[in-house]
Image 1 (spheres, helix red, strand yellow):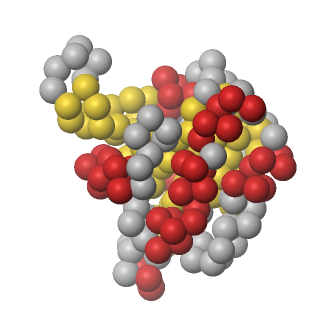
Image 2 (cartoon, rainbow, N blue to C red):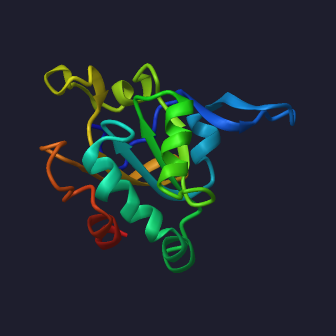
Image 3 (cartoon, rainbow, N blue to C red):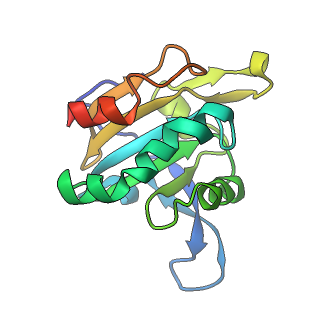
Amino acid sequence: MIKEGKQLPEVKFHVMGKRPDGSKYEPHEVGSSEVFRGKKGILVGIPGAFTPICSSSHLPAFIDAAEDLKEKKHYDFIACTGVNDAYVMEAWKETLHGDGKVTMLADEEGKFAESIGALDDFHDKALGMRSKRYAMIVDDGVVRYVGCEKDDFGKPTSSSLEAVMNAA
């Protein structure tokens, strides 16, 4: 797993939204440097959208605290990435009432997860290759804190909102 003090690699994500030219609402590419450059925030990595722990406690905690994180901790963004496509990530964000609170970064081929050492084999859970569960504080593209779970399907500890808040 990527270490604190390291620069995030340049990888392309897909995000839902209007294209940069203002055309239709659909997935479009955005580079990691574009997402993280000159900003401080939280990146949450998940094994899968709509999976039990991801949906019940992990990402919802960050969504519920989004305003406080931005106002009191001065974070510019909260982003979530998973090895899912942009349509699934967007639908999940809507289900979790995350509009305006979290940016969904689809890593459908797992290239970002692999580049930071977070790609793992979840075939035994019927999920295929997925991202480990983690949360990190990123400042101008540099990892300042990373908490990666040993048990991706247990209660979040080092990747929990509380752990991130204590690390800030």
